[in-house]
Length: 147
Image (cartoon, rainbow, N blue to C red; front, side, top):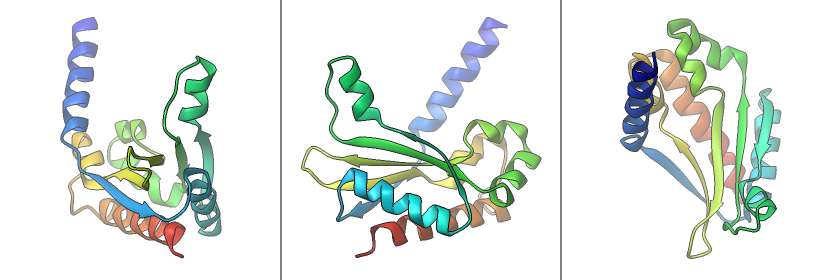
């Protein structure tokens, strides 16, 4: 059993290493970018499940990170079809968008390309759920960073 779990973990890590990360530049701070994304997500009828403040977590152990936080959100109408195709898609859903400040001080919203994210679960890139997630994530992040 341990060997199977280890093999699965290595396979998942290798898959994630090859995944395309979509980055959207934001003219706002990390906090304001996620506040704006939260408003857009909720305005679209989705639910925000968590906001993980990575930089604040680092401070709790007397370490430093540039500003960075993760928003976890979803809408059953969007995510359920993927999990019906393969329950293991629940490992990568609901959606996650990371807001972070890079070494040059630029702020980004970043998320995994849905086609890459769902490929390990045998959900094809041309599946309607993948196309819908791609469209939704692009629209939500685009609207959040619009001036």
